[in-house]
Image 1 (cartoon, rainbow, N blue to C red):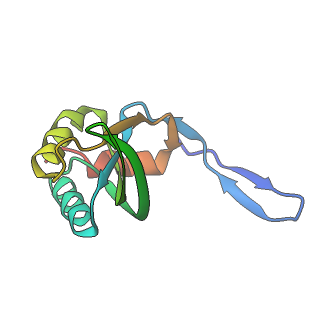
Image 2 (image 1 turned 60 degrees about the vertical axis):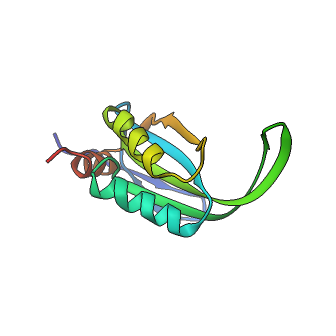
Length: 130
């Protein structure tokens, strides 16, 4: 069926085309903190090559404050944001745990609610088993 577009114009006469959003329940965002850029790049490459995620965004410059062994700690970190199928989460977790330098790495999964048809099709294609 053809995609239905909606044109939306603001009061400043700036117009954008809106594509209808579709359910994205079979996909998730995974947040992983790492100590440095080389670790972030290595983990991103591993999960992408294994097709366990379609995309990895690396956010440098985080300052994390947390409790560790009864003491309040602070450290610089990076956030790795992964987009993946929920069916790949177990394999993704195993790969991250096996290659992460922390004893207790942060691996948090957030479900996706909706996304554009094109983007979800791309996610699906990139994470398909081959």
